[in-house]
Image 1 (tube, rainbow, N blue to C red):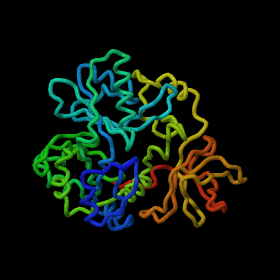
Image 2: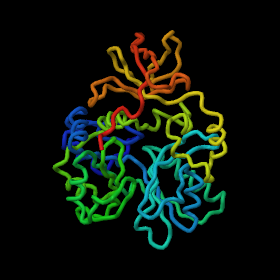
Image 3: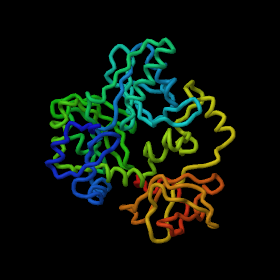
Image 4: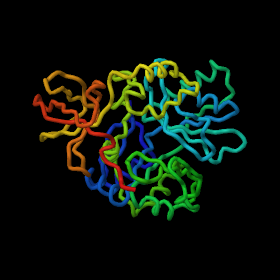
Length: 367
């Protein structure tokens, strides 16, 4: 099957990007190099093309009820312009996907939501929404808008200045997880103060046909690929769908994955009863940060052992941190081994390397 391409695929090719298959999309993995792009975001600003992310719009009289019953956070707490991080769980409480839910600031007469599935999940979740809508007899319209919108992320300490200069309306006053609609290079965009790097910044939902005009409004910002996006999010302790949890290969619930804060048990949603039981009983395993003490790099799939050599878990994500110059990773271990400073081993090419549990995030910008 041919890979899907973002609207700026040719533009990125001309800029010298190298590409990778991610979620069925051919996306830029790097432009000038992962370290240079990573450092640009930590020290100044970078812009990412994240048009591989899905967009599903839900509107109509019963849209709030449908969104509430299919996501774990409290959709009822959202006013127009608000957004929240949430999970989509099955009846057993396992994560199907994580997402950001936006209540559109320009919704008109009916409540309208836009939620962002991870790459390759939009068909699954569009079907899930429409099937449950029909089963429950709800009055809501569910539209897959993935190929109507491009999506860019401008991230870093200087991101506010760059986006404020490009937008026709002020965005500097937006607080975290709020959004507005404003003109950028002649296109009406949804601009949200959200991101996936551990830095301040914005994500812009842009009309597909206007992608080139909006992207070139940030010509003075370092273009970044998915390679730097991965090292940045890992330093910030943020999860990657399909890797740090996988509904088929590595099913995990939000409490195991360390994102129990997204679960509001005083709301009604698919998986609620199962998650209430998990919260009461506790979890057997937890996702933890891991730092190697010995020389080496933890990689996805490497075994984690206790100090006696017994395998107790598996690395789900790992890298050499460009910011910290230390080898870091994420992995699930038994709850009794999840306390910070607990000594472990990570098996790197059949060689057990000393490691310890680190509190997350590994990196957090001083406020």
